[in-house]
Image (cartoon, rainbow, N blue to C red):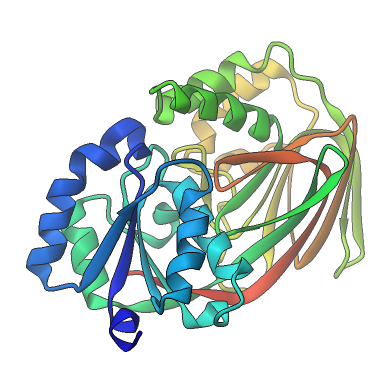
Length: 312
């Protein structure tokens, strides 16, 4: 047990990056071994497997976890941290070697995409403590809960994420796939009458909603800066609301998604808060950290400085 506390457990998703996880693992293993980092590793086999493995290895004494995968694998490990009851989540440590298609969480923290630099970063073990989001949502008539460390997207964002996830399952992925789905989904999209209640400030927004992002990190969708002012340890969610907007305007604004300047458009509002509820008619779907989940209504709460991570 004492030995496990000093070792890293590497959770390797072989399917991440449309097979890049499996293809590059030998190279990553060699870099880890040569760096002198003590580690064990295990491959994930199916959806939610990383979550189950995380809780299992925490019980076995591991306290340091390394994700070799993408944002979805990272999200599962984080949820493993928060649903287990063996130790408080803030006694655990998380690091990442990005091999996914989006790697949006890494972009906020400047975690390098080059394996050699990512391994060097883990060896240095510089620790930062970030906020964590918790969302309550519905799957049919069942109430569910999920933790997230980057961005939750609703409305149009969630539709695009769902299509992109289907493409990933068929071996197609990457920022271009997301962009293709962003454009192709415009044709049939219906706006929702939405009420956003920021409970800690008392601010209420009612509008026809195109998309809504609630997040801790800045990036989503493979490098789109949807929350350009987000600070991951300020104890607040950043919120970007896009109200009903012309579909040709969406196409014109795509380039501005990558530098965050789209938030200056008159149909875009930016807000902040700790506790948020969202109701929509008709219901809107949800994605968190790129993982497609259920539908509205939603309730968001923030856990201030809830997760210890390795960063530059």
